[in-house]
Length: 93
Image (cartoon, rainbow, N blue to C red; front, side):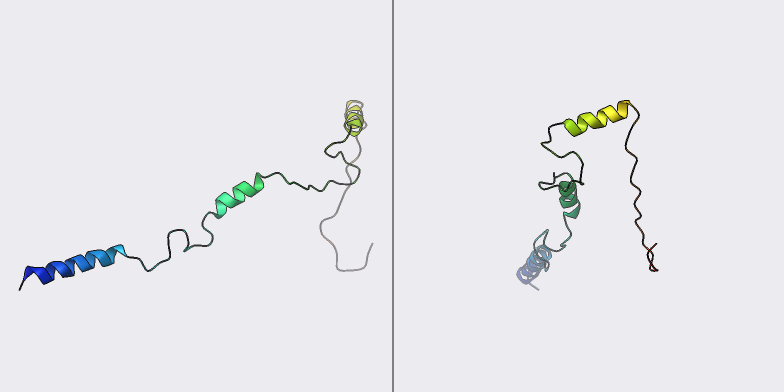
């Protein structure tokens, strides 16, 4: 047996081992990089934030902050508004 067909077969096997049936690297898993995207999203400032009614907003004159600081120093802080997060399926209270 000649060594030429054997070397051609060996070269074909080596070349076949280098090929891939998969898509290019990074395209096989759609969630690849999801952690990086999430971390970037939570560190991004909201360009259009929603402020609660009556609270200090960006660009306020500082009068609300001064009044809040004065209430804090004189121990006259506004009471926390209690809200329920679960509802009942029965009649209203």
